[in-house]
Image (cartoon, rainbow, N blue to C red; front, top):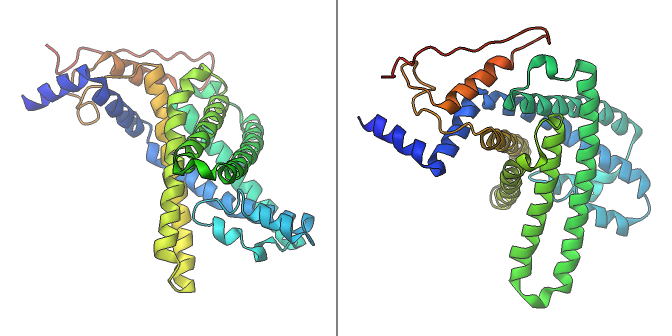
Length: 327
């Protein structure tokens, strides 16, 4: 049968079997919902955090327009879709009310984002429920991840600033430095940051080297999101009315955070598939019980079942009977 030949072929070719296994794990883990939860909290936290940062900078940089311009041209202005709006000079006017309200909303969204990120990591790595952090420790770890993420943004901003200076100094070297070397350096920096954060977010339950493939995928997707959002704003939002610009910016921010969340989920699941060798999968395993399971299928389904263990003294045994489609 054609399906049997296609199944056998994809099992023999990792270039097809690995991506298919990642997609199947994405479906098994309900990756769409994991990404949606992260998108919600990211959307709630991103704008308040940035507005809070600009408000604080409004206090600190009052009377220093030159330094203010330098800040505006760095990390805030470079954020996809809304960076230009948040980076305008009028956005740096600080007020006590803005700081208080922004702090409360940013704290809610940021803690939720850290919790959603850890939940996605735990689901992807099939961490048993009793081995996951308790609600208090979970939020403390979320704060730790947020601090690490904030420091990472500072590092990325620093690299971006150094890259801009290097571009000016090396202008005579041609476009190779600007369009190849500098994006590659940025890609490597983001890859290192994502690898460390995803490794620490799951409690260092796997070697750090297992986080590199997915981190590279996530970093490349983030650069693609930045480029795509820049093109979107320049081509579609510059000549529209103020109301359309507002709706466009909101929808664009939602789209950016959703795509970034999807990339994060896919990247983490790529790490799991490669590290635990969860491939090849049976071609029809998501669609029917009449299928001959592979060893990777059995390992995956065993992990899903054991992830539901709620107590340390609870024992979960997984048994597979003869495959209905077997000989």
